[in-house]
Length: 60
Image 1 (spheres, rainbow, N blue to C red):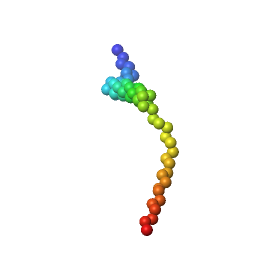
Image 2 (image 1 turned 90 degrees about the horizontal axis):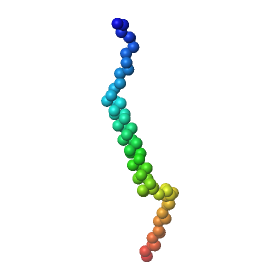
Image 3 (image 1 turned 180 degrees about the horizontal axis):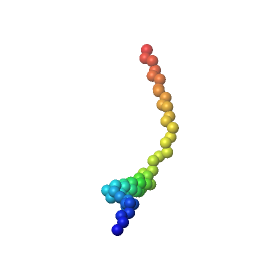
Image 4 (image 1 turned 30 degrees about the vertical axis):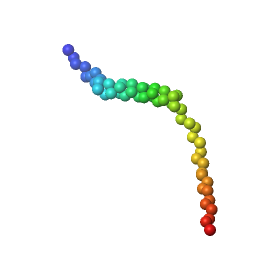
């Protein structure tokens, strides 16, 4: 009856569950984002044009 000095790796089940839930939620979020981008595509960004100010006529 000899005991082995090697112990089994300890697995933190709570951390593993948290990681798995995070991955599931992240995948669902990516899916919702892609569906939203298909439904409402963002318009191409055009360069901002400078507005000309109208000169007011002088009153006499």
